[in-house]
Length: 121
Image (tube, rainbow, N blue to C red; front, side, top):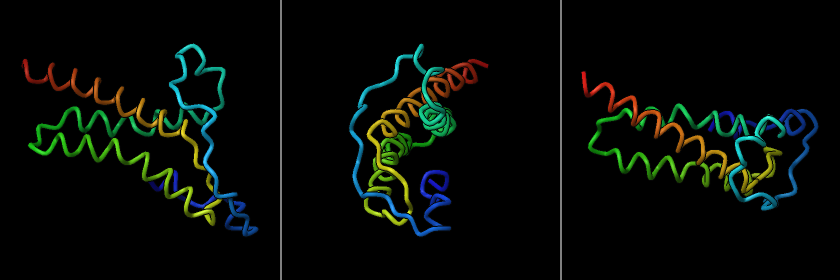
């Protein structure tokens, strides 16, 4: 959350604020072949959530389902905060939610595979 809710430099230095709207122009998952052709933003949004997914996937906690639900809710909360706090000069984008959930899903799969391999030992 700290990486995505820190005010941008323009907000700190010049008092610039966002327009308080949310961009819904991309709501689907980017095809893997398109990732290198996009800006770094989708790749970073995916990468930020992979470690969270791996850690939950490796978890043997009885609260694992609750952790997954909270992790799924997290991108929605981040984008909502960016929408309602225009002073951060951050943009609310539906694509960010999709990218975050993609990273979470990838991490959960990797963590699950790792947990399965570790339990065989």
